[in-house]
Image (tube, rainbow, N blue to C red; front, side, top):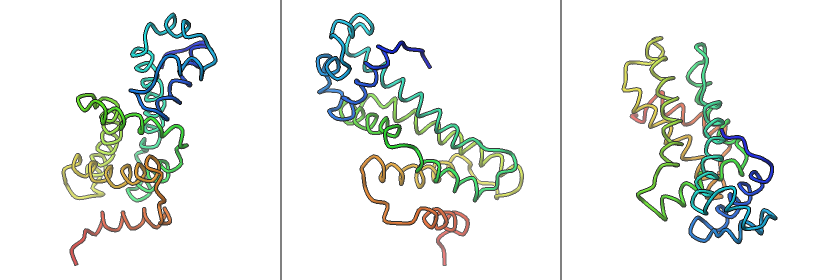
Length: 195
C-alpha cells in the first residue's frame, strides 16, 4: 500500500466519505476540499485530477479491506472445516462498518458504470481463491470427498459473504443469531438438503 502524508490522507479520507454518501458521479473536488479542510488547488497539485483521486482512494480502501479478508480466510493445516467456516463468518461480521463501506462503493461503481467491475471482482476473487485453497487442502487430507473445490468455494462464499453484505451494506437486520446461522449453514453444507 502506498504511503501518504497527512494532507493526502485527509484528502483520501474525505474523498471516501463523499463517495459513501453521494457516489462517484456526485463527488466533486470542491466538496472533497471542503470536507478535507484543504484548498481545491492542493487536491490538483497532489492528485492531478478528480478521477485520479477517486482511483487512488478506492485502491487505498480496497487494499485495506482485502488485507482484512486475507487475514480472515487464512488457515492453518490443522484447522477443521466447521471451525474454519464459522470463523470466516464471524470474522466477516466483525469487520467495522466503515471498513466494509468499500463494498458499497464497489457496488455503486458497478451500478453507475457496469463495464467497471474491478473492485467487486477483486473482493470476490480474494475470498473465493482462499476458500478454494482451503477446500483443496481438505480434499487432499481426506476430510471431505473429492468435489470441485472451486464450486464448493463459490457456494461457501455466496452464503457467508453475501449474507454479511446484505446485513452490512444494505443495513438490514440479521434477524438471526449468527452462531445459529453458521451452524445451520454448516449442517446443510455437510448433510445436503435431501430428506
